[in-house]
Image (cartoon, rainbow, N blue to C red):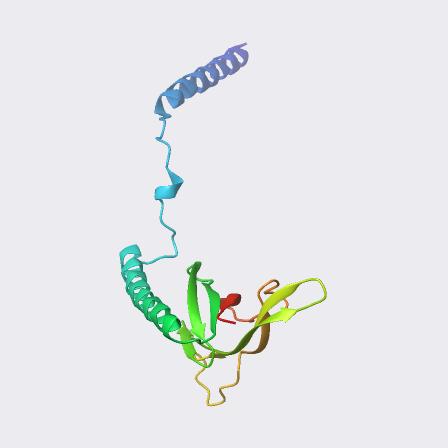
Length: 176
């Protein structure tokens, strides 16, 4: 009988310890304030202030270029191509205007527009542009075009730029 009493005693101690542990566990749970997800910065950015300063510097130079382009478009009848570019790493888009025959740099890309016109179809009209794009990050002597052809505003994926970091598409043309 002594062995039976020992089993009951051990069972009671285990039951008592489990019930008291759960009581102490309830006291240790604390509520945490909610986090506003909009205040969190992305983890891939090393220093947000540095990137914002660089972006502001680029924006001020592009604003100056846009003001210069706007003033020259009033004086002459150059044809301009309006482009939108996406940097896939930083997820930032940039709009810029490129005169036909001029070169513009976006990141490691050199973009040159050769022609911009309206395409007349049976039922629809579309803006099309002939672009030449070089990737300057490649250090070889053979500088071939990354993209050389017509691109369409209504369907930018029909003839698209194939680059792992940048996307580029036409939005419209001016003075055509």
